[in-house]
Image (cartoon, rainbow, N blue to C red; front, side, top):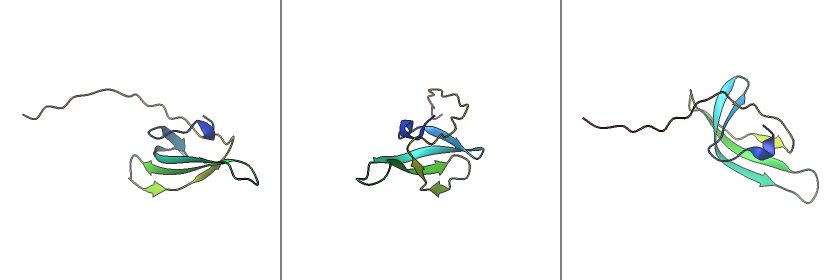
Length: 74
Protein backbone atom coordinates (compact mmCIF):
# COMPACT_ATOMS: atom_id res chain seq x y z
CA UNK A 1 0.00 0.00 0.00
CA UNK A 2 1.32 3.48 -0.83
CA UNK A 3 1.41 6.26 1.74
CA UNK A 4 -1.23 8.32 -0.09
CA UNK A 5 -3.70 5.40 0.29
CA UNK A 6 -3.59 5.59 4.11
CA UNK A 7 -6.98 6.48 5.62
CA UNK A 8 -8.37 6.77 9.16
CA UNK A 9 -9.28 3.34 10.51
CA UNK A 10 -6.86 1.47 8.21
CA UNK A 11 -4.46 -1.06 9.68
CA UNK A 12 -0.85 -0.88 8.48
CA UNK A 13 2.23 -2.96 9.21
CA UNK A 14 5.56 -1.36 10.10
CA UNK A 15 8.59 -3.44 11.19
CA UNK A 16 6.40 -6.49 11.84
CA UNK A 17 4.04 -4.55 14.14
CA UNK A 18 0.38 -3.86 13.34
CA UNK A 19 -0.77 -0.25 13.76
CA UNK A 20 -4.19 1.39 13.49
CA UNK A 21 -4.32 4.78 11.74
CA UNK A 22 -6.02 7.17 14.17
CA UNK A 23 -5.48 10.36 12.17
CA UNK A 24 -3.96 11.23 8.80
CA UNK A 25 -3.34 14.44 6.91
CA UNK A 26 -2.11 14.84 3.34
CA UNK A 27 0.16 17.91 3.15
CA UNK A 28 1.18 19.61 -0.09
CA UNK A 29 3.63 22.38 0.77
CA UNK A 30 4.37 25.09 -1.77
CA UNK A 31 8.02 24.09 -1.79
CA UNK A 32 9.13 20.46 -1.85
CA UNK A 33 7.27 17.19 -2.22
CA UNK A 34 3.96 16.18 -0.70
CA UNK A 35 3.87 14.03 2.43
CA UNK A 36 1.43 12.28 4.76
CA UNK A 37 1.41 13.15 8.45
CA UNK A 38 -0.17 10.38 10.56
CA UNK A 39 -0.99 9.38 14.11
CA UNK A 40 -0.92 5.60 14.60
CA UNK A 41 -1.64 3.30 17.56
CA UNK A 42 -0.08 -0.12 18.11
CA UNK A 43 -2.85 -2.74 18.38
CA UNK A 44 -0.88 -4.88 20.87
CA UNK A 45 0.88 -2.42 23.20
CA UNK A 46 -1.31 0.67 22.72
CA UNK A 47 1.76 2.83 22.02
CA UNK A 48 1.06 5.94 19.90
CA UNK A 49 3.45 7.37 17.26
CA UNK A 50 3.32 10.36 14.90
CA UNK A 51 5.31 9.28 11.81
CA UNK A 52 5.49 11.23 8.55
CA UNK A 53 5.65 9.40 5.22
CA UNK A 54 6.87 10.88 1.93
CA UNK A 55 4.46 10.67 -0.97
CA UNK A 56 5.01 7.32 -2.70
CA UNK A 57 6.53 5.54 0.33
CA UNK A 58 5.31 1.98 0.76
CA UNK A 59 3.78 0.67 3.98
CA UNK A 60 2.83 -2.92 4.67
CA UNK A 61 -0.74 -4.15 4.61
CA UNK A 62 -1.26 -6.71 7.39
CA UNK A 63 -3.14 -9.97 6.85
CA UNK A 64 -6.20 -9.32 9.03
CA UNK A 65 -9.72 -10.62 9.00
CA UNK A 66 -12.56 -8.33 10.04
CA UNK A 67 -15.76 -9.73 11.49
CA UNK A 68 -18.95 -8.01 12.60
CA UNK A 69 -19.91 -9.30 16.04
CA UNK A 70 -22.60 -8.67 18.58
CA UNK A 71 -22.12 -9.13 22.33
CA UNK A 72 -24.96 -9.86 24.73
CA UNK A 73 -24.87 -9.17 28.44
CA UNK A 74 -26.25 -12.13 30.37
